[in-house]
Amino acid sequence: MGIARGLAYLHEECSTQIIHCDIKPQNILLDDYYIARISDFGLSKLLMINQSRTLTDIRGTRGYVAPEWFRNSQVTVKVDVYSFGVLLLEIITCRKSLENEESYGPEAILTDWVLDCFHDGKLEALVETDTEALNDKKQLERFVMVGIWCIQEDSTMRPTMRKVTQMLEGSVEVTTPPCPYTFSTTI
Image (tube, rainbow, N blue to C red; front, side, top):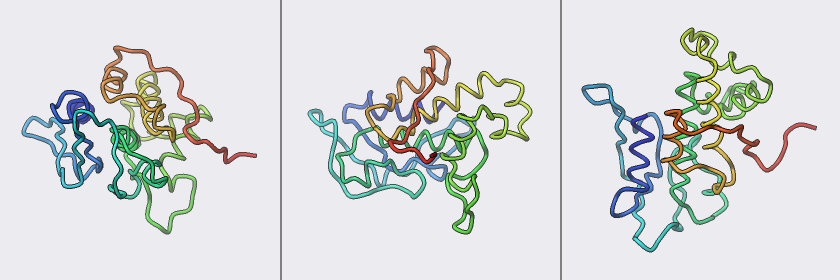
């Protein structure tokens, strides 16, 4: 929750809106009370009051970079939402966003594997050794759905970090997300 709240603060509460541009596990630190804190603002972009998007070169780390970076589209705070979604799915599954380059199995790309498990109704495969998660399948489903909402290819479909925080807390309903990709890999 600390990461989601921190991003909501950067995006909506700072006097100058900040896009972090590199949300990943290595940039999350724990304080003395094990509260997650966002670090490494070296790639961050500041948006002036009259800006909601910006053009910039690709920033971030492979596996966490939002699709709009590759389309030379203007980027918004939604690039951080995408990266947070990948991070959330990593936390749920205890797996990396991308396995090493020699991996080609169904689990090699975390987001694809999570989507397959979600659509096949096999969420327990995501947390097979986590008895706490297996005992609360409703919360597991809610967290996975939040992650899938965050990784929507269309950035306008991604929720704000404020809404992500509310969905994770359970204060707003999480509806079933659509397939995040504009193309289908099934025939």
